[in-house]
Length: 263
Ligand code: ARG
Image 1 (cartoon, protein in one colour):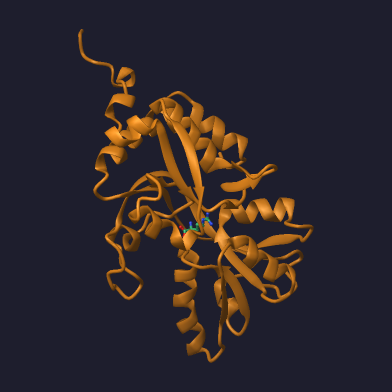
Image 2 (cartoon, helix red, strand yellow):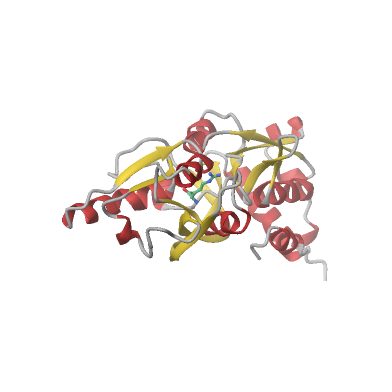
């Protein structure tokens, strides 16, 4: 029949006019989160997200440019139009969709997500787990470090009150990057960092700046990673969902996951 094969659709034509005329897709990312996103030698963006973004750009016929941005500034700078979308191991959740903080207060217009991966949260400790941390309850009465603006910061905020009930203060050091939180653990200034499982598994295997780590206990709260878009940019969101579908069908997606050991 004459039915149009959706896989043959020209996706470039469906891009917003501004992206087409610029011939570049700008992506906000916090490049401090190996293996999901980091700077390789020569400060080049590398990792799961940059590879996926480049594969999406290829299908869309545009070059991809990465704008390195601290994680907690990614959504504000998306609204400020510093880039077209965010791809930064960002968990798709209700608060970010609604643009509210944990208390339900409106903080920004909210974003749309196209989901592309699933990851849980892990507890990272120094190698051999000297404090024998097995769960977030074991963090009560201790000092931990983690990256500002993350879902992990929200999880720990809730844990703070659980620790209050057993009269053991949980002390939190918030850092700009996850790497800084890991350095505090390495230097004995914090007993644990909470981050996404792929990152935890990677640092447990590779270490960081010569320091060695371990993953404690089991994963908490598996949730989707989403590519974030400003709500008024549904045109880009819809074409990106199709581009993602295409790299899943043509095997590129799985190849990239395999390359980074997260397939
Ligand atoms: N998935 C977590 C979140 O959305 C952490 C992401 C941190 N990403 C990064 N590039 N540092 O909050």
